[in-house]
Amino acid sequence: MDKVDRKRPPPVKVLSGQLRTAEAGSGDSFVLRPGRGRSLPVSLVWMQGTVLEAQLDRDTVLLMDETGTFAVQGVNSIPKGKPCLSQGKYVMVMGVIQAISPEPLIRAVKMADLSELAALHRQMWRLEVDDLQQVLAR
Image (cartoon, rainbow, N blue to C red):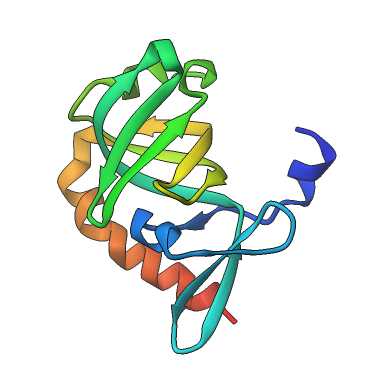
């Protein structure tokens, strides 16, 4: 990790639809508006979704959560990332936002396969996202 990563705040749980409506912030961060005039700066995110398509020759995977699709790049260099890359797997991705338009693009730092308990993870995800954002947003 370089100096920039050590100063980076912990990852924020987000939905792809929230990233699509985010605004540019300072530096490499973006600002989410989780409601009621509150704002939440993010650069490192934690997302979950189902693998739609793995393009290993392009070092990219396309995922979908309940609010839309998002792309993840750098997947070939993630330790233990390969088992996560089959179509239909439900995975967790932690990474740095590279772009929010036309589709959210995340550079992966960590991936994990959550397929074994996918129904539970999928059911709880929006609640986890909402809960964390309520605590963090100003």
